[in-house]
Image 1 (spheres, rainbow, N blue to C red):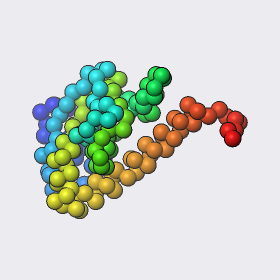
Image 2 (cartoon, rainbow, N blue to C red):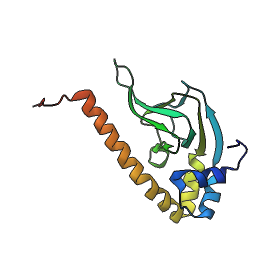
Image 3 (tube, rainbow, N blue to C red):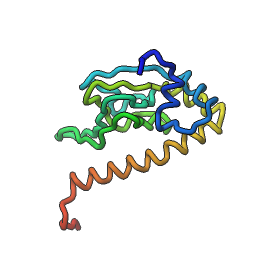
Length: 160
């Protein structure tokens, strides 16, 4: 895939936007840009402004949780065809986790303010995006829950 292809084509080919109306894809494409993230580079850090939403085209990104006195805990590793970041759509628009490329990663980065403004101007677009985000958020919450069981729980051990 050439890096010069239009953002609208990259959106159309990404599973997250499968079946979305072409006019919505054109609107969203106006907020996008191709980005390259080298291995080890952070896409964002906890507490920073959530100013982007990412479509992973190639590579892998670890979503990490930091706790004082501990090594970062990888909650999930995301790859090609997945999305990264939902804090841009939920006030106060701050990242809740860190995201670090674990290998060379190529993404489409979508400007959060641009997207929020377009969703505000066209509530049908916003509703379409929320319907696409809800299952992703639910799955990510379930994955985080399982990671916490691994971290704090031992099979057969009961806490009082």
